[in-house]
Every structure is written in structure tokens, then in C-alpha cells.
Image (cartoon, rainbow, N blue to C red; front, side):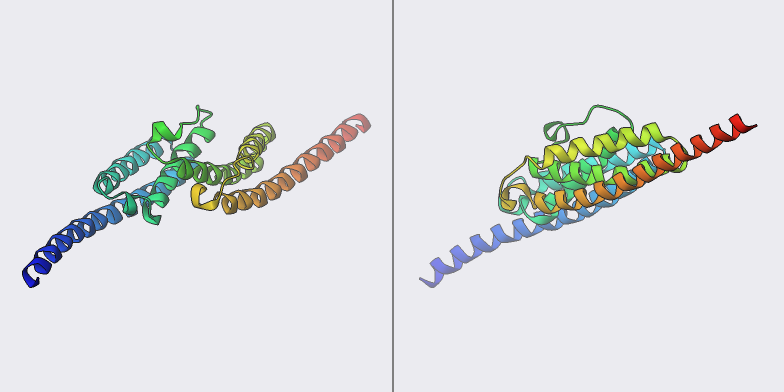
Length: 210
């Protein structure tokens, strides 16, 4: 019995050692993915599309490393760090596409899960607020209206995804957060539009009086 238990224990220990080693590789790769994605999104907001794409490519390479390491261990692959890395990668690519007026990449083309893609889409829509405000400060109201329309359409899709959080990765909370951002942004845009119309009316009256 002792010899049998020792042999069985050694086999289990070897399996767990391999799983733990894969997890450590994946965690490091996930951290690199998230860091590169954050930098990519910042580059998008600075208007540096080439740098944003390069950083997103770096993120993709790290994400594939994590996915490959955990491929033999589905239970680990479905855990939080991998979902977060996939979500951040989707957000980076979707933000770049929305800002650049490019077609939105699908979950399949990005190599991420459906829940990660949906949450990434919601966060990308929230990122549009910053871009929109930059355009309002520059006086580009038409682009501001276009971006708000995109945020509205994304929110309209997300509220139709009615599945348990265990399936969607907490999408309901992310969508609620987007709704708050959307309403603040709508208020900011409405105020700016009204101010612009008032200023135009005043300037028109002054020209008439002059």
C-alpha cells in the first residue's frame, strides 16, 4: 500500500508541478499583455496610430504565449487573469478601430472569448469619452456627435446580451458603468452644442447690428 500511494502521489505531484509552471508562465505573459494594451490605448488618445498598433501587436504575442501555456489546463485558462488579459487586448484593438473609423474586429479574429470581447467593447466605448472631449475642446462638434452615436449603438447592443454573469464575465456591471459614462458624455455634448448655438446667434445679431 505504501509503495502504491507513493507512486500515485508522485504522479499527482508531477501533474500539479506542470500545471503550476504553466500558470506562472501565463501570469507573467498576462501582465505583459495588460501593460502593453494600456500603453496602446494611451497612444491611440495621443493620435499615434503606428505606436498603438505596434504595442497591440506586442500584447497579442504575450497573450498567445499565455494561451499556449494554459491550453492543456482548461480550468486555469478560464480563470481571472486570462479573461482580464483577453478583455484588455480586445479593448485596445476595438478602441483603435473606433477612433480610426475602421471595421471592428470580431472575437474570433482577435482570438479571445466572447465574454472578454463584450467586456472589451464596453470599455472601448467608455474610452471614447476622452476622445470625444478632446474633439469638443477643439471645436469639432460633428465628430463629437459621431462618437456619441457610436457609444450609443454599442450600449444598445450590450443591453440585449442577457445571460448570467458566469457566462458573460460580469458584463452587466460593465454595461452599467458604460451607461453612466454615456449619460455624462451626452450631457457634456448637449451643453457644448447649446453654447455653440448661443454664441453663433449672438455673433449673428452683432453682425446685423453692425
